[in-house]
Every structure is written in structure tokens, then in C-alpha cells.
Amino acid sequence: MKKVNVDVHKLVQNTYDKIADKYHERYSEYSEFFLKFSKEFMNLLPKKARILDLGCGSGRDSKFFSEKGYKVTGVDFSENMLAIAKKVAPKAKFIKQDLRKIKFLENSFDGVRCSFVLLHLKRNEIPSLLHKIHQILKKNGVLFISTKQGEGEIVEKESLDQSFEMFETFFQKDELEQLVIDAGFELLLTDLGYDRYENDEKIIVILAKKITEL
Image (cartoon, rainbow, N blue to C red; front, side):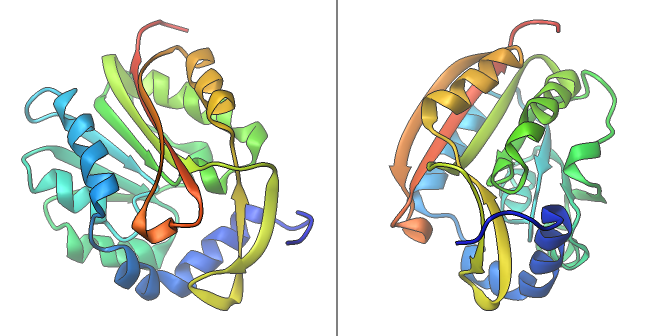
């Protein structure tokens, strides 16, 4: 592990551009762990809901939800990831945006998906993103978060290709729960578990509902 002293956003963007094919090959299919929580997410949404897939990567989630009749918009800042996503999920719409600067109309989505997205932002950037998500969600809109449990912020070798590095921010479950509450959400479900893809690290999953106007 290294101390974080680089432009982490450029680092993450460059690494994902370089490993896009390997990433898609590894993570293109749902594990039982994420299938379970994706169904929980769907159960909280209206039919034909509008879903924003933030940090959509190579399009696995966008494909899953768009094929079930939801109107999906995927956002990522990796050109190569988006190129794959457009082929994987042709029914979804994809936009290149920096997650720190997302621009959508207020009250425009029924659900927002943040699967391993907070992981690649600096800790002090998380409240701002959660506030923006709160704004673009409709009343009683649903937020899905999954990320790794841990401590601190690090730059380390990317597991899919050791010739590149990746920046990651880790959270404790109660810390992340409080950030979500502070952003104007009611917690509906929180859980810790192991996914087959990350079987040595615990995954935090949160489902929350927008309840207040900030």
C-alpha cells in the first residue's frame, strides 16, 4: 500500500480504460450475493421506473435492469467501459460524466444505483455526491449502495492487472449509514456479506429511501 499523493481521479479513469476488457470478463455475470440485493432494490421500485446507474462500468447492472423493463441511464467516465456497456446493454442510455459533477434534473429518477462507486472517491467527496443523488431522486426514491468495508484511503496494485494502480476508499458500516442518513435518507436495509468476486473482503450493502427535502 502507498500513501495517496496522486491525482486519484485521473488514476482511476486511466486504470479502468486500460483494464476494461478484463473487468468485463470477470464481472459480467451476477453472483448470488448481488442478485439477491438487486431483487430487493427492484421490489422497492415502481413498474417501468427510471434508474440511474452511477459508475456503470461495463454495463452489467444496466443490462440486468433494462432487460426487465426499467428505463436505465448509465454514467461513467471511462470511455472504454462505456464502449463495452453500449454493446452489452443496448436498451439502456449511456452518458460520459464525472461522478463528482453529475448533471441531471431534480426529481428525475426513481432509483439510483451506486455499486462500488463510493470506493473510488475521496472520503470528503462522498457527502456532496449523496446530496446530488438526493436532489435527482423523486420523492420516496430509492438509493442502492455497495462498497468494501475497511479503513482509510489507499493506492495499490490493481488486482486485475498488476501493471496498473487503483485508488480505493474504505468505510465502516455505521460510518456509511450515517452519511446516508445525513444526506436525507431513511435506511431500509443494511447488510454485510461476502461476494464470490471479493471473497476476502466484506461488502457493505445499503438500501435507503429519500424522505426529506434538504
